[in-house]
Length: 94
Image 1: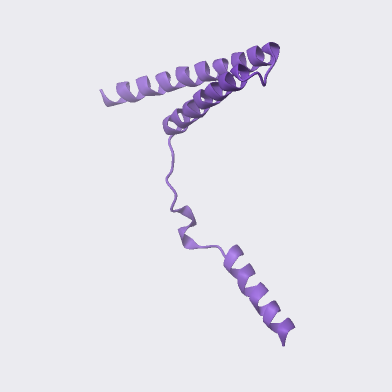
Image 2: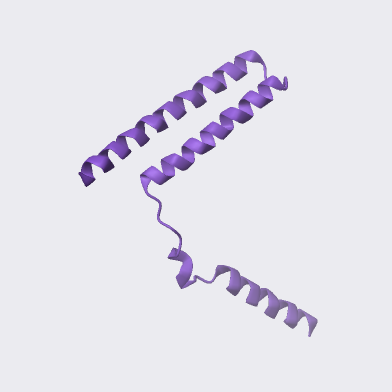
């Protein structure tokens, strides 16, 4: 009896977890511009964390400089693409 109850409960949980619901597509569709702005915020936060870790003495100078340079290059690329997309958006409305 206990085994049957456990099997039934396991089956019920598996159906609940893996059943495809119709509301799965209810999430917001992000534009490329929105994605880039979120990514920019993440990169800036990572730069702040990197600076904190370096000032706390947890990173050697060489590693800090390398990581900072790569993050700054990524931030610059993101900012350039944001600017390009915003300009295209403004020209499209005019």
